[in-house]
Structure formats: C-alpha cells, structure tokens
Amino acid sequence: MASDSFPPIRRLGPDDLRRCVALSVDRGWSPERSKWSLLLECAEAFGVEAPDGDGSGRLAGAVVLTRWGPDLASVGMMLVATRYARRGLGRALMERVLAEAGDATVTLFATDMGRPLYEQLGFQPVGRSVSFVGTFRPGRAGPAARPSQGGPGLPAACIRPAAEADLPAILAADGAAFGADRSRVLTRLPGFAEHLAVLETESGISGYAAAWRNLPSSAIIGPVVAPDAEAARRLIADLAAAVSGAIRLDLDPDRPELPAWAHARGLEPASRTTVMARGELADRGAPDRLFTPISVALA
Image 1: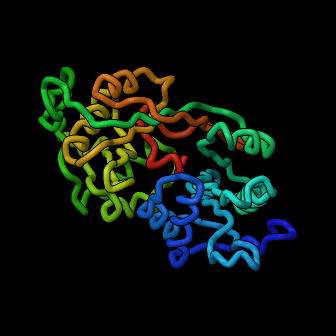
Image 2: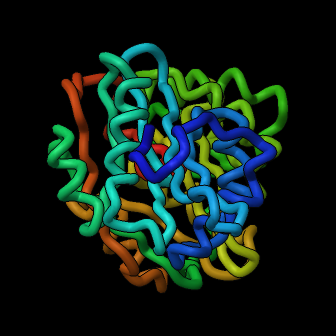
Image 3: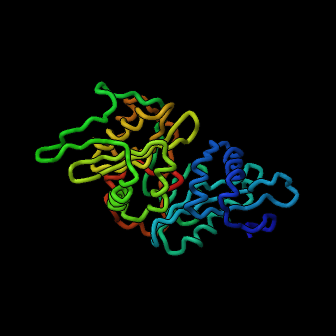
C-alpha cells in the first residue's frame, strides 16, 4: 500500500496517458504528452489513484522505471499531485520502483526539491546537468550539414537524415557509447522523433542525434552520440536548423565541449539538476561519446 489513505500502487499503461498528462500539469510541468506516450509503451510506469471520495478520477502520483539491460535502470517522471504532497506517497512510489529494479544500479536526474528523498534512499550524486534553452543561432558558416574532411588519413563525414535501414547501425553506435542496451526506446525513435540524423563516413555510421517535440513551441535534441565534440556540434546544428521554435539541450556543465558553444549560439541555462546513482556505477561504454541524454526522464 502507498499508505493507509491511498489505494495500492499499480502498473500504468497507455490507457492512463490522459491522467499522466493531467498529473504533469497539476505540478506545473509541461504536459509532455508525447514523452508520456513513449514511456507508457516502452518502460514500467507505476501510479496511485486519488483516494476514494476525491471525485477527480485522477492520479495521486506516478513514477517510471526504464531498464537498460539486467544491471542498469533509470527512474524518471516522479510526480505527486499538489494536494497529496508531504504524505509519504513519493517515498512509497520510489520504494516500489527500487524493489522492481532489484540489484540493478539505478540513475536519475534530481531537482533540488527531490534530492533529499533520493539521498535518504541511498542515491549519491555522480554528475550535474544544465538545460540550455532558446532559439538556436547558426555560426557564420550556417548549419553544419556539409561534409567535412576529417583529420589526416580519415574519410570525410557527412550528416544526413536517418533511414529505416540505419537502425541496426544506430543501435550499434549507441551500445558502444552507452555500454548497455537502450534498444527498447531507440527502436521507437523513427516514429517518435521529429527528425533523426546520422553521421556517416565511408566506414559507416559513427554517430546520430534525434530531435523530438516536447511542446508545440519547442523541441529537445537528444540523444546525441558522436565520436567527438565537433561531430556533436555539427549534429546539433543540423537538427536545430530543421526544427521550428526553441530547442533544449541537456548538457553536463563539467564538460567543456558544448555548454559555452550552446550559450554562444543563443541558448540560455534554464534549469539545473543533479545526476544521481544508487548502486555501483561501473565503467561502461565510452561516455565521452555521449553528449546529451534521450531525456532527463531517462538518465
């Protein structure tokens, strides 16, 4: 039971989309209907009905667990309706997803408000994230979609829209960088993302990036996986030129490659979170090739 006054925590599914969106709005978050739809299809969402007599037909709280193979998972979209705050529901939801995760290491992006609870549950800070938001201004050369010659002896690289046949190569590039299997989410990118681009050389696809619509007026660019910072900047610039409205990049401020560049291109720091982990965060993949997450709901 979530508590004596709440119904039992239950699994949520696609039929709960409307109520998940309403819960986001209740907490002052963006509705993020498309992200909720994705998570309800490919992750494990849990929620609690509003108590009997509430009359709203809404959720009192929700949280999402996404698995990246057997030993790594992420938690996101941890929400409790305003009227039910400070009644132990957030802790109950977190304890449920941690029990579901078992022995897997669990990561999340914590706001300042949520961090004390996560620390009580055994999470430790492992990094930082800053959301840069605004209208992207191209550099003097304009959107970086043209081929580049690379270094001595290296083939030219070009950015182009991804095709369905590119998905195995995208999964391979992502797996090598992330060090765990994200295919449950990434296989849905062609239908979920507004734009999906790959970085290709004569040797094959070495990076990719997606832009997906968060709000009618803005888009998130993520994930961005690339062999180096120059390639990441080119992928971001290419997608930024293709989408309308503002864009958002979730960047590690302790890495020098992108934050200053993003700011120079018109994006302003809008919010900050702490990346936290519970369990052993083993070295895996090639983290220097990971430049933005899919979403802060998918740490």
